[in-house]
Image: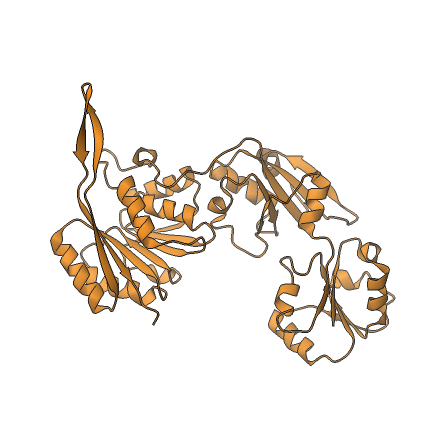
Length: 397
């Protein structure tokens, strides 16, 4: 069974050997557009429709000489990656749409970050691409070039210019450069690839964003996990690039935002009971180029809307600690970590007892930090409020 990649120029772009294989086979499978490239084919034609499971089951029973046609490189966001695990396939790739788009742009692409929004949500796109100099995007009708432009402008990512390649190698091929404003106002063919390139270098923020860079409640500032404590909590969470993270009692969103920058290929979900604080969190997201899910509510309400996490940070429990911890640990994935900030010894004792009763491995870090502050021509130290950082690790079972 052979799988052959094909472009929008049809048989014209294929090697003679590939065309020979196609005409010699008993069954030719592909999308309607692909099958139309071979009107003289005399065998059976099957259009790919429905889910992959049905197609896989059908192909597993097929004993005849079969050729499957797919767009571009079958192993680049294509059928090949799925079917090759279940079928004895020979795969013959064509040039991928991204490779063709960069050739039209006359731009090297070994350093490009490639992302597919085809059939996927744009949620979290901001932190995934932040700071990247060159990005190739596979689009669809929902995540069109216009939508991408508006999204980037919303997060202040205006350092990018765009190149849009439509209908590559087809009759209506068109390739053009745009500013984001121009791309937002232009209509495009559904078949397109978008390439973003930085017009000027913009670096990502390093770990430990200064407190004054977050929008906070006024006039009573201070409801924020301070930078020094925040970095300690983040290291205790042991986040990976693809971690799913919960932030309970997010307030300004400082922990959630920094977590999103670390887990940029994962996702962050935050909940906050105060409507004004949630508004600040949403504003801080845009300011710091992180697209997280933040909702209004008092945990454990609404936690059922979030996917099971690898890591949970609890900045505030609202006085219902035992029930909240039970819910969180029942949802936490195996080997996941839960981190709490606690200010009083009474709450520390309660947390320790609850976490041990729930079968966790628990450790505590007491943080007593002082920061230098000028006084006339001298320097003194001003202490931050001491805090207990409680870390609970969930077992494998």
